[in-house]
Length: 180
Figure (cartoon, rainbow, N blue to C red):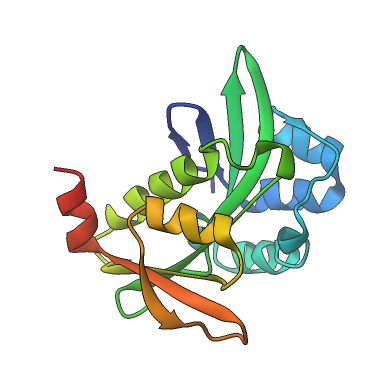
């Protein structure tokens, strides 16, 4: 299955097809060729290292699921294309809900790219009628992540599943109202 692409003001978000996920597992050079983008030292972000193999296996078994997993965030600036982060969902909608997660390489943090990408993914997810709520979990001391979620319209929703995490959520109705 071919990957999907979402364009924003500064980014191109590319869904992680099984081919791209395989290239990611093979290393930076292979991923660079697959994305047609520079992949800098430091890739992958720590949180992504553990997930790429699992997402590859899931995408191979269920190709249609790939769009509900990882998206690669490519900064498009002055004719240059650079992979700066990734994010996506833990799976297809279940009971009207999806969980979103994200990670950004340190040199590109605190520049607005994270909220730009997360907003685009939220918008894409809510275009699917099966999604009524999007949730995210972060560590309670991760101020940058909390700020990003709040900037994207998420609201505090209580404790997370893992020790030390908190949960944020946004409902479809609130998102749609914020876009009017």
